[in-house]
Image 1: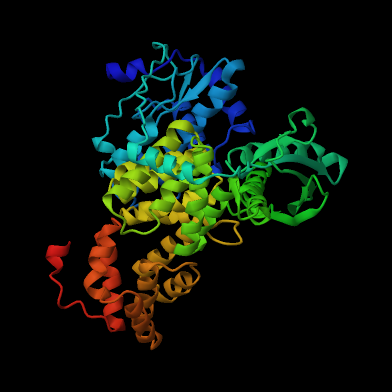
Image 2 (image 1 turned 135 degrees about the vertical axis):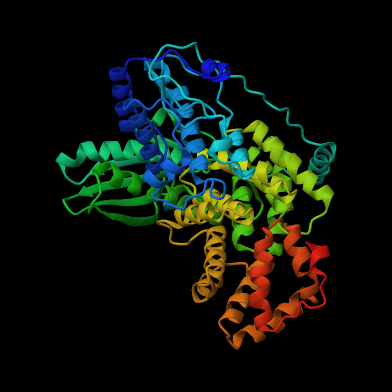
Length: 576
């Protein structure tokens, strides 16, 4: 064992105590990780209990837990490192918040895939998500990692970690930008804040009350992970906000269950008026699933449906606010316009964000969305990219546990061609809120563009699960993957569902039709040329400016050529 790894090992407990803590943790509804990450943790723990003293290989986890085929290659598919990183973040968050009454905590030391059962908590959050993902992006396989064997449940030195916290500064240009905007505001604006939601769940029958209470607690935890609202139980009246800028909603739920399925009826009620704004029914088939798995699936879909940026409550907040309202309403409008609107809507949302930041310059949500809005088009100049990076870093420095801030940092890094750092930030965002489909979808498109296609597709599928509308970025990943695998009809169908078709989406639509020898391809090509004049000459530079994998250019060029495009004049070698 290396001295460094030995220093990372805390005093460990007996085997019986370790087993007891594992079961306690996995049954604790406050432990906020996905079902797949729970399976990985149990797998690592069982290997340790069985006497395995070496770090488990990514290959074994991929095959035994994630269901990957025998040809799995960790160098080309970083899904194991991504899931382990998110699991580490979940472990640390749980023990930091609720570890005070625990005699033992579970860790996965940095650089290993090994479960350790310690008497001490780490002094700082392990900075492992970035390092693990950096190794994945660099193409390192397990043989290149310094994964040392660790003795099973023996005493070691107290765990010591050093976290280097970079100083994140907003640039003079960005500060001046905010100051100028402040001078333009002469009237006191109407400020909106995140709404407060009171959650209650009743059981349809007395014997289901226990299940209903557990499901409610799990839902509270999942809703809290979102940055779109403030959550409280219905009887927490002492926390009822007096700020008129914060609207109040009651979320009423009723829990039903029988041998075949579990069902939750819900309604969102505006507290002030008593109006029912939206209601629905979530039903889940129990066939072949444990009660816990069904509850996790139910809670995940409810949280997404209700609290995601395009969920029920955010949609109500966005539509009910006046055009002059700043604050949370601006943030919601900006998120919507970036995913669903065009350049006019984005420009309007950006102006609203400017007014918000002139009034509240330290609003991390507004800073994060300002960064993203500046990068709405791929052909922005270097100065704008730097300004966006300043906004994103400022958002992270103020709210490091915000997935919105980490997503903004991911997009800012990606816009500057720093793919490794982009994936690190995206991985942190996904670890902070695994329920947010938009966060997962945005990480998926970055992974796909970087060439990590299997991991990207898995995330895109996860982002679309249980959603009435699949996130735009998830649809794009699935459409590109279908095209790459020769399923051109599916690629065409998926790409046509994407709102706000961008340059790459339009190119994909035409390329898929070209591969299908459709007459519509030539018609679309004429329209494409009218919108993007001389697009053949600009095609490869345009895709390169978005830092997409070279293979995407070649794959799309093939279909565009069949549609009637001509790339013969290009000196492809000089462009690539």
